[in-house]
Length: 335
Figure 1 (cartoon, rainbow, N blue to C red):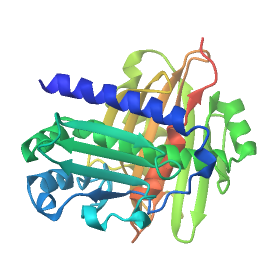
Figure 2: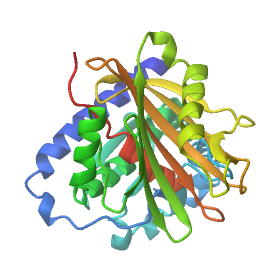
Figure 3: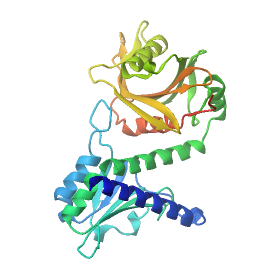
Figure 4: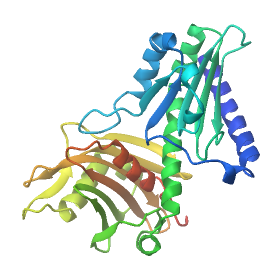
């Protein structure tokens, strides 16, 4: 039964997304801009349900720790509103979940609306026959629900980057690494060799680094977790030095990196997500995320990595920005 519900939800999402995109394509310019802060979700739910197992489940899903950060930060920040309090001022918020529970519904459903009241807005509407059905629906589809809002946040950032693209850096990356990447203006070249490029944006005391490197591909065993960590350390220890002579960046092992295999832009990719630290220098560290693909035409592994240093600041939104850049990665051609 669980599999049927998940498939049913996926079909509804695809149908509604398709219909809404067709319906709103012509009126899109008339919609206002979204409101709210990045990473926020308004949950429209009555106080009784918010303080019940339904609210507990929503908090458990969305307020779980964002992987991987030095300190706790939730995946999303939730703002609860009663149905009576959900007025016009909140209708343009970027991310909204609306929960309606009533015996009048013939069945329990999950629906996703895109661009309903504002551009790039996402609304998840849950209609359930009772509390138990609502709880089951949320629990069974929790990964898909998170994915919907994660994808929405990433797409918004990528749209911003497309409108603020650094064409000079983008062209350099195409020629040097055979990939396209959405690099927004503000990044500067910090170091460039034949096989390694270090871009950096510095705003106050916050640093965002983009590292791109390549090396020869031999066989699939190179794309395992241990091999990817080893190769990462070879590059960052060689090229990403600290202010003190002899200091360098390496991968933190106390909290092991998370490894994932997935498809990105129709191409097999592997992801490392973890923490970095400065070795033999000033105490520094922060989160990183790297994605690697095999460039079959040139027999290379190409890696794009983002690193954040933001001591004393929350880091979730900064790593999300880098994630949006990295996940725009596309190989220019295949063999």
